[in-house]
Length: 99
Image 1 (spheres, rainbow, N blue to C red):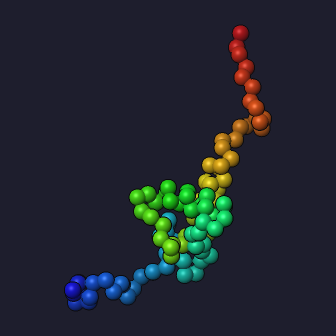
Image 2: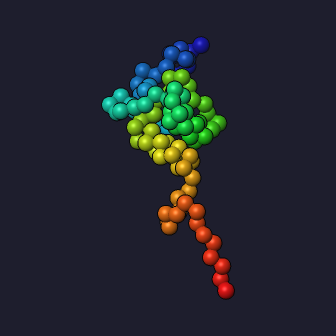
């Protein structure tokens, strides 16, 4: 089937970036990037965070993200596993009753 400009549909564009960050869409050609795997606990946590962020899309076996997005996902995965922090720095906050 022929598309716009009499080129077959499905052959891909001749111009543009093909290797882009799954999250932000920036080109990964000249950047540090990370493949998305679940080989370690850390990678699994990052993978799960990214999967939540891109719902309803799915992560493909060839998906990559830029380092900036990887760092954001890593921070989010750490926060999810460590829970909220307290400003007092106490493990067991005490409830003070007013009289």
